[in-house]
Image (spheres, rainbow, N blue to C red):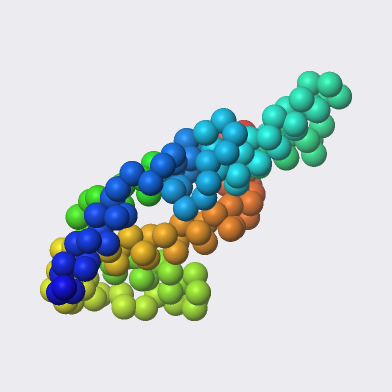
Length: 167
């Protein structure tokens, strides 16, 4: 079996139907549980519901309001992740897509962008299917990073809205 045949076979596996996906984040890697959500998204939903219930019963304090806004931002980020990453394995990937993926991940890991300006090289060095596969793997790494740091990003979102006046 040639490399191209193996890559094509792996893409077919990735594109296949592997059971339910989370209704919010569209993850296939994490089991779908209650309400059609993965465990991560469901915990966010449950925490939000508990905070809303507490606010109804005891009144809304500034501390409780902040916690609700953070959970709301986490829910929005889950849903945004689902819209952004839904069909990565099914779309064409350019050399620029690969460059952006690597630059993003290297910035997170090393604090500096590596391989900036290599889009043409990535575009010519890999076949279209290889680019799709590479983009998929890099995208999954970035997705897991954002998943693990969702609280920090959500707190930043709330702070940005507060400072920007979009309360």
